[in-house]
Image (cartoon, rainbow, N blue to C red; front, side, top):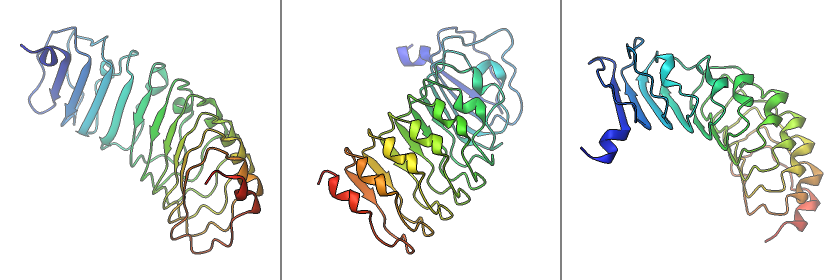
Amino acid sequence: RSVLGDELLFVDGKKGYTSRNGNHRYALVVNGTRQIDLCDYVPTKLRSLHIFDSAEIHPSLYSKSLRVLDLSMFSSGSFPASIGKLKQLRYLGARGMQHESVPEDVTSLSKLMYLNISGSSKISMLPDSVKALRSLLHLDLSGSCNLSSLPESFGDLINLSHLNLANCSLLKALPKSVNKLRSLLHLDLSGCCNLCSLPESFGDLENLSHLNLANCSLFKALPKSVNKLRS
């Protein structure tokens, strides 16, 4: 058997599950329409979990050692109740989530570096507790068409380098605290058709190298401070 075969756990909810190997580090779950019976097996060494076409997953798969969790094809549209316990999580992919705000269980994941909740059409706000995600490097909120504002605490994401707000069509402005995002390299605001302006302090983003304002039909003019940005 290959090393990958030993480390990869494949669970198909329609076919059942029989493995007793305790060395799995990667798991792929498909067709999890019911809680799969894992018997006495708990994959305590899991580092990466990817879920496809599933509505219900056995709690034991949410190992506290997880670094990567991909819920992008998790048909329930909700974060699992136990997600706040995944304190080692670095990557969370959860496109199309059906929450109206990012749960505080998610914002408590202090080691999270990558968060993708694009296409989450019901999200209308981010909680002030988003400031706790100090390790975050990449945030994708694109297609969150009901997101109308960002909290002032957003500026506390001081390590953020990539921010995608494309097609957040109700977003009218960025918080004044955005000037604190000194690590920001990439900002996509394309399709933000209600965005009228940027904060006057926007030029403080000294490392910004990519700004996309395509199809921002109400946008008037860049603030004078952008002259301070690197070409």
